[in-house]
Image (cartoon, rainbow, N blue to C red):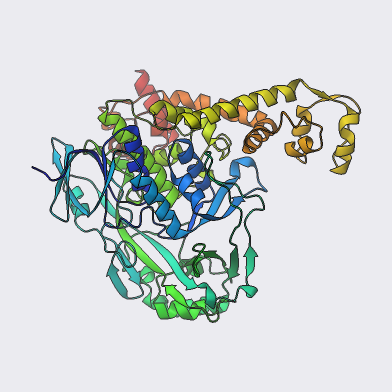
Length: 622
């Protein structure tokens, strides 16, 4: 008799993906076991102590709207908030927070320990047991066999992880933490393909050794917002970040260490993230640039530790020290933790279905960096979706797949399973063709009803969405039907250098003016305060965006609906694309390997041309 009961789902790994997967599946009603080698570091921020950013902030809002917890944890551990890209259009606005690294993990632990149906176990999974191409159990380093109906692999950078600091090579998934050995080889024995990627992290510095008077202060927003649509507490006080710059002197010191760099010597096989390169990569790639911007980020409320964002390096520690002390303000700096590179195993996501389940082994799911992504937010989103879909499948319910026009999460997963990765995948707004629809302010309107129907988003969340929808409908109707006289508005228009009017105009026309904010029309008593003061002030953000960009939004919706017809043309997994002779050879190979489920997905596969899609359409018609 096993000392463990049989679990519905075993989650392997307690990072951002694992936490979201475990909590989501348990909240839906599955009996879940979360296995991690470290029960004090749930959702650990291995790299920078921040959540959100360009496109990533939108993902966190989506996770929250779906009933996930990354946004709530971020709010509870936040030390600074900034809305990025305010000077650009609303499709680009992206929330970002600095967080207390320790508190972030503590908050996740609280949530996990208070989730009904979720148990935790300190151990390491070294293999899976498969019968009839379906997972039936996991095996652990302690020699245990834990029976389960499904498993979700969220091992992050720990699979065969190696840490590089100059010529020093240490096995590990993070500095000071051992790597996970054996699981990759076990999974490969079932025909799952594995490759290697590389990432890195900068030095951590004792803030008492930094001369902040020589740096540029970067304070948080004057009126800080938050991530969650729930009633988490807003920030009252904040900690500032700072900006520093490298110089030619710094670059010269770094170049002296290039011969010892594992990146340039060929020791590291894995490809690193293009959009977050190491400082030595930047120097080589942007040879004509004599300085690079660095962000000096505090690690929490009660610590002197700082993270030097932009100074990721795998050079010897001596070289890191010498270069660091050439930076203005860092002349006497003391390093707490060296920068390092880490190489690890991942599994090509083209081996997964849209639910993140393996095409080789039934009920085996993969989420996070094991799928070739980089970033806490991308990992958490995958974990949430894998947790939902594992539960749905075990209950013989419909799978939960978000489309590209519904969420950045939909874009993320579709990109992964359709295109695969040849470098760590990071989300950008430019990856989403419908980004005006996928704003950070309307994630609740887009997704909460879908999640509530699953049983994940609470009734309270749905009630708030309904309240927001009703408010926007009522306020929009008033704007469309109410006229404003010149005597009511011209004095205000003159004060903001906006053209005055000579005859009565609809209220909506004033909101359409780019130089006028809705809240100013309310505060200057042109619009009734009793109508335009909702219970949640963020309702007005969505209202204003929907009004100002109405024509663009309608155009985007029309475009999305026209593309939808390709999503609805389903492709059977039994199709042998090699038999369609007019397809290019590359298209036949890619289509047979990936087995797209729709014509739209087929069109997004790298190597499948528009001509190939035309051939496929003709073949389907026959």
